[in-house]
Image (tube, rainbow, N blue to C red; front, side, top):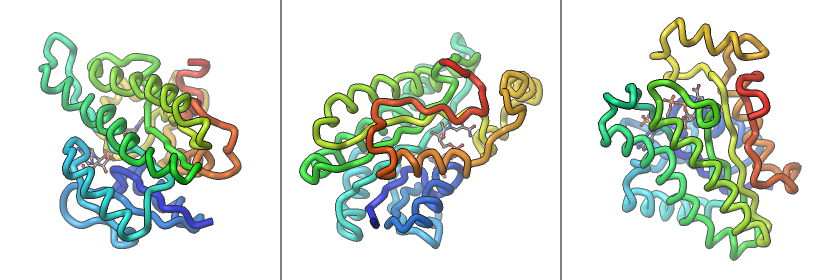
Length: 234
Ligand code: NDP
């Protein structure tokens, strides 16, 4: 079945790989991008996810091209690290706005059509840091932990309409996002990772594909770890 899929932050990193994996399964995939050009292989909608008007326009463009979004992957995310006493409120707010508030906004805007259709899939991109906490990442960890409450609340609200809502909690995945992680910190995290290596965007994307598939029809409100054993049992 070819569904309309929207991946936020689908122009690079994990999001781009999710877009590829979903397209390979036969879905019609749209991605958001902020600057420059979208990936040539996908229908790109320009959108700063922290901007409400941008978000509404982007969703309207996707609906016009492919029909209403049936699978939402709210993946866009940022870090703005600093130890808490040195972290500005703006840096805290920016990260929460991007990682949590924008995810909520996309979900609330796509939900009505999913309710009408009595089918939908929503997948949020969290992080093991939301469970572990992370020095220098009070903003990031708070935003990713917040996604758990969002996931479970929406799972309750939308479950009776055959809409599943889940989140994926990756560990250390090789993308631009972890290029700035200091070697010592990286080694420390890998020492706590059972598989003793970083993950690939494909390894995350395959789990998202499963959660969005009919095979996962009885999975909702779940936090699915893709961390090679990092934060096992959290
Ligand atoms: P990247 O930095 O490679 O990509 C981040 C993506 O988010 C980019 O497409 C970026 O767009 C987009 N984005 C950020 N802010 C905005 C915004 N305001 N509006 C629109 N798009 C935005 O990171 P990853 O691919 O690694 O991360 C993807 C998700 O996975 C994030 O939510 C991240 O927190 C999460 N994650 C990543 C882990 C890792 O180890 N890599 C571990 C756990 C979770 P642009 O190109 O315009 O900047």
